[in-house]
Structures are given as C-alpha cells and as structure tokens.
Length: 282
Image 1 (cartoon, rainbow, N blue to C red):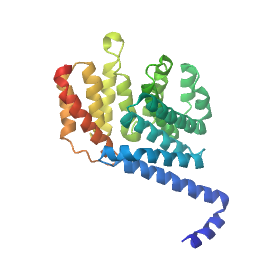
Image 2: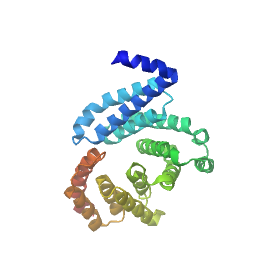
Image 3: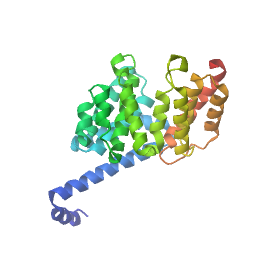
Image 4: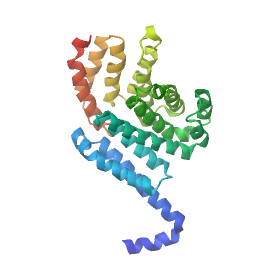
C-alpha cells in the first residue's frame, strides 16, 4: 500500500501531501469526538479522556495553524473539565487550555476579532459584526470555551465581566445559523439569562424562549436541554410543576441518539439527582 501511495504523493507535491495529512488528522479528530459522544458509559470516557487530550495536543503540535484541530482541542478540554473534573485548580488549567485553543482558532480565521478579544465591549461587537456564516464554528467554539473558563473562574470579577462578550458571540451564532451544533447556542443563552430573577434585572422570559427553542431544534433528542431548563429556569422561577415534568420526561426518554448519547446519559443522571431534591428545594 505504501509503495502505491508514494508515487501519488510525489505527483501531488508538497501542498497536496500537506492537504492529505491535514484532512486525515481532521477526520481522526472528528471521529474521536463522535466516538466519545456516542459512548453510553461516562466512566469509560472519564478514564480514557486524558489519553484523548494528549492525542489532540499531539495533533495541534503537528499542525499549530489548523483551526479545525484547535477547535477540536478546545471542545475536548472544555467538556472534560466541566463534566469530569472536581478539583478547582485543575479545572481552571484545563479550561484555560480550551480557551487558548479557541482563541488561536479565532485569530487564524478573523484578525479583526482576534485583535478585539481584549478590547472594550463596543469595539468587540463591531469586530463581531464583520463575521459571516463560515465563521460560525469558530464563534461557537470560542463562546463555549470562554463560557467554561468563566465558570471555573467565577470568583474573579474580571472573568465574570467577560460574560457580555460570550453572550454577544452566542447571539451572533444564533443570528447566522441557529441550528449549528443542534441549536446549543440557544442552550447557553438560556443558562446566561437565568442567572438573575426579574426583581434583580434578570430576563427569565428570554431564558425560557431560548431553552424551548433549543429543545425544538434538537427535536427533543437533546435531554440535557430539558435538564438545564429545569435546573436554571424552573428553579429560578420556583415552578415545581414545570421542573418535575421536564425531569420526568428526561428519565422516560431513550438516551441513545447520534452525537448525544453521552450527554443524554449524563442528563438522566442529573435528572435523578434534581428530581430527588425537588421537594426540599421547593
């Protein structure tokens, strides 16, 4: 096989070889992500994830200017830190790596956005308006990695001050392609808008609309959307009926769904915990 491949690579030249290698590593990273998302045993993912992280790091080391690879690394580091890491300092390190990867991808795609990452909010939004539909993956990846980083640095007011930029990124994703990643931008926006009750200036009605749209776009297959709807909105509004109904729907559903099996399995775990504490909370 290698003897047959060498003449082809020689004919393609250096650029052709690089494109084949890049395509192959991108497919490998994507296949790895899909394999993880389709796993129904979270413990297997938890045990194996550190090896996956090192593998992605090796891909990034080999192709440091590959935005797709950087985004794959950002997603994997961010997801692992948010779901499986309880130690605060370690979670902070991992989410910092996720954010750095996502920012590097953004800088490779959009110079103006890159230069505005640390700028005041108004300048940031101006740069954001220059993005288009082909930028959606990097905008979404940057927003989710940044949100994970803020969550792990919530005791730092300077980190919390970045929330409006994350919200702006997510709103731009919704504006350009709300169906990207199964509508998960709506899910993040639902959580963001559920942080404060109406009496403190919160906009829970906006949060509810985002949660409902996320559920609609996933056709109800993303069970985590209902769990977060219950956890963040229903509890904020002290709506036990909605809270319990959403969680019971999650527990009654089949968790198996392409690219959603792992998160659905985790959603059912969280639903049991939240439902068990429902009467005490309300």
